[in-house]
Amino acid sequence: RAPILLVIPPLTEGAAYVSNICFSGTERGFRVVVFNRRGEGGSYLTTPKLQSFCDPSDLTQAIEYVTLKVVGCPLAAVAYGTGCGMLMSYIGTSGSSSKLVARVCISPSYEAPSKSNCPIYDTILLLKLKCLVLRHMKALSSVLDISKVMSTWMLPEFSASLYCPLYGCPSPSQLADAVKPVLGANAADVPLLCINRNPGLFWQS
Image (cartoon, rainbow, N blue to C red; front, side, top):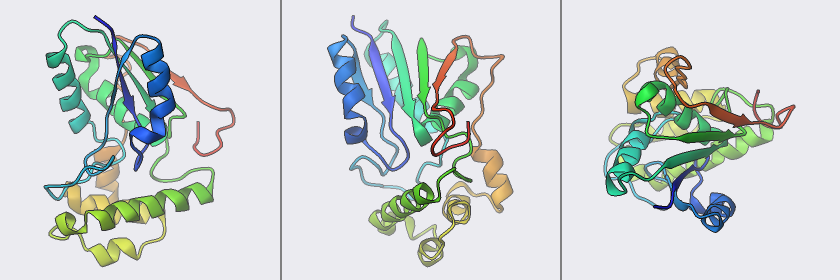
């Protein structure tokens, strides 16, 4: 059977953003699957929960589902930008039980969501995240102080005001520990290829 390529877009993006690699993958014989975070890619929230920068729980379920539907097919993954944190966390938490035979991170954002090399990028990401919150305001209002979230204009403070309540973390430091990318290199049995521009335009390498 044809191998499967799982593509993970950056935070706030969907299938359209990764259409080029999807096309290239299908041309090379892959069956391509795009992973959209909950509430993104045109989907709607039914519970008051958005995924943080690198929470791998939904990705883990998606990978389990794909491997059950197409038993015996090799599964590879490629992630972009802020989507790399989720892939790294999946690798770190799954270790040698990972279902992926190959994994690639393109322009991984090691410092997200705390800082980047480009303030303009921070502002653009912040605006996109605010649009995401507004789109799902009805589902999130039972947990979030929407006015507080929308009035914040620094990315670290915004992330704390958004994700601390959603993850039940009383402080930003505990949130950072909860959502920090985890890469258990000793447990991972397949190498992770990271492709970076040097020096990185947006994120620290």
